[in-house]
Length: 307
Image (cartoon, rainbow, N blue to C red; front, top):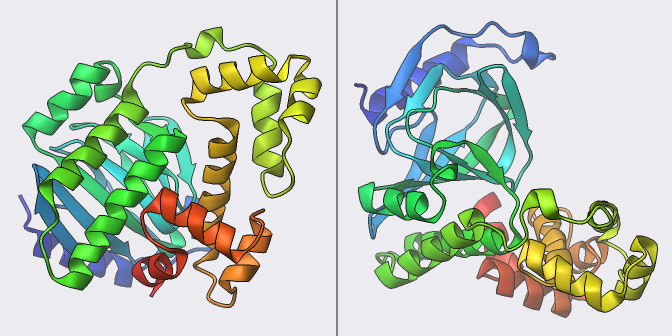
């Protein structure tokens, strides 16, 4: 088994010897298959913390590359903070954009394709006790790779990252209770069975969701949504909360905050400009909503992730 240093050296070697291609899909893929122990990743580990049975890692990839076929001995969540990468799991491929997040179970063989500008990820690995938390909540999901889309899970994960970054800046250990609470909330939001299963969702809800994702930066009114779906506004609000475990307003705010997270990486945009581009009334409204969702003001988040 390679050490972390060996892995970093291996990836550095591959990055120097693998030339990014305009069509990265056409690059030859290495035949190696690795099993990575807890704390081992391809890429440069910029920082890690151990707290409450969790290992939190800030992971950087600076070059486009195909990583070897591999599996992890410990399950983990991941949050893509910047760049892009694509997962290859058997015959399936999934592309991920910044601030998408998901779950990788232990032992799953897969291959990662790092995008042209590299990638930066926040990874959360579990010990045996935390792994059982996932299996107890949703046993089928505990063995399945998945990208997660839950709005409240997104907020809990970003708040955990904010605590992780503040511990580095302040030079203190992460608070165990805070970390345990946030990861328990995250697991609950991400994996608990929904009150209304996917197969029983009404057909009229899908066009509503498509509209929200296409127009969240503009003015969203529940009466107009209900009229377009052909249902009563009260019925729309009730069913929406049953399915997504949050209100329509909370869901739209999360979409706006997710977009703002990406725009904060564009250093030429001011906070007021980002507020305007993402549908908030003004910079003050943006700052309040962002801080409540992420656990840190947008300026602090920008320094933590992009500086």
